[in-house]
Length: 124
Picture 1 (cartoon, rainbow, N blue to C red):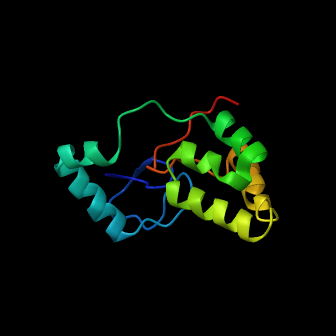
Picture 2 (cartoon, rainbow, N blue to C red; picture 1 turned 45 degrees about the vertical axis):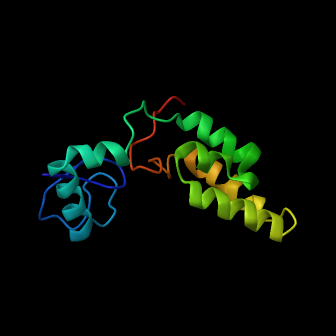
């Protein structure tokens, strides 16, 4: 039994798609996950053991400060956050629409996990 890298639900080891979110489950995801389960010390250093991130806070940050990528920094997607800052600066602010749309997607439950693949806390 493996976990879906997108939503965290249980997936049969021979399944190609997650039964909950429908995302494809690749053999590489399963082998990486199995290796992480066999080596918990390495897994603990990659994914900090913290409380799930708030969906409401991430969505509001995306709506209000999406052009600066603040919601992505909060969720642990630092590379995406830096790219959003650059896109917003290069496009003289027009790129902020990207972050606004991501804020809506978070609140509408289309984005369901943080940068470490953990499900978001449903507080809205």
